[in-house]
Length: 337
Length: 154
Image (cartoon, each protein chain N blue to C red):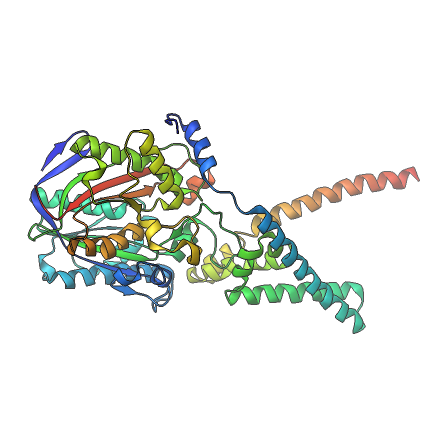
C-alpha cells in the first residue's frame, strides 16, 4: 500500500470483493433495478414494530446473506465496518449486535458504504485482517421521521428533494480471491459551497464529488475514459447535471460514462421520486446489486464508485447552517496491473 | 459555462439549475380542493340547520365532522396523498390542522404515550397554536383599546 498524490492510496496486494448482498424496500422493488437485488421487501416494517427495528433487521439480514454467499465460516471474518443515518448509528449497532464480529461503527452520511469499503481495504492491505464486512443501510420512513416531517403529514415535496432509499448493501472484502479488485481509493475532503437548502442535497454534495473525482484523476494519472463507468452515490438528477457541468468547466468530460446511483434506482416518471434516490443504501444497494453483478459478468471491468454524503443534521439545518458535502472514491477493476 | 470559484457564484448557479415548484398547477389544485372541502363543510352546516339546529351549534358540528374526517383519512394513509396533490388547499381549512396533529401522534407512538404521542403531538401544529393564540391576544388588546375609546367618546 502506498500513498499516491495528495489524497489517494494504491494497493499493492490484490484486495477482492468476494460477495455482496442487497435488500431493498417495496418502492425500490418497483424501480428499474429490482431484478438485481437479492431480496425485495413487501412492506416497510418487515414484521417489526418500528421503522428503526425494520432498518436494523434489513442491515442484519443483508450482512448475514453476504456471509452465506461468500461461503466463509463466520469465525474467519475479522472485522465489520458499518454505518447508517440514524442518530448514533443505531441501525447498524443494534442490527449487528449479535454478529459477534469486531465492529467499527462509522458515519459518513450517505458516503458511508464507500467509506466502509475504503477502510476495509486499508485494513487488509496493512495486514490487519483477511476478511472484512463493509455495510450500510438507510430507511425512507426512519430518515423522514428524523430529518423532516411525519409521513402522514399532507405536505408537498419540492422538485429538488430526493427520496431516501430503504435498504442495505453489504460486501465481503477479502485478501484472497479472484476479483473484482479494489485497486485505489481517494478519500475526499469536506467541501462546503454554502448551500443551505436541505431539500437540495444533490447541489450541496456535487462540489465534493467533483473535488474528489478531479483529485483522483490527478493522483492516479488517469482520465475519465480510463473507466467503463463512473458512478456517484446519490447526487440525483440535479446534482448529476451540476456535477457534469462543473467537471466540464475544469476540462474533464464525463458525460459519456458517468451515471448516478440515485438516478438509476428509481423511475423518475412513474415513481414520483423527484430528483432521485438518496441515503446510504442508495449506492450500497446499487453497488451490491447491479454494479457488482456487472463486474462479475465482465460487462463492466473498471469502475469508479464515488459515494457522496451531506454532513448535516436536523438541528444544524434549523439553525441555518450550510450543508458540507463529502465524497469518497474507490476504483474497482477486474484486472490488476 | 464559466468556471465557478466563489460560494456566491455557486449558489446563484444552483438556483438557476434547480427547478421551481409548478406554482400555477399547485395553485389551481389548491383552489379547487380547498373550495371543495369548504363546500362539503357548508353542506354539512346546511343539513344541521335544516334539522333545526341554530347557527352556532351547526358550525361546531361542522368543525367536528371535518376534523374527524381528516383524522380518519390521515390514519388510513389517504390524507397525505390529498395533501401532496392539493397543498394549501387541504392544509388551510381545519382539515390541515387536524392532520398536523394526528400525523406526529401516529409517527411517535413508538416512543410511548407520554414522551412520544404526548410530547411530539404538537411538533407541527405547535407553532400555529403559539403564534395563532398570541396574534389573537394582540388583536384583542387592540380591539379593547379602540373599543373603550369609542365608548368614552360616545
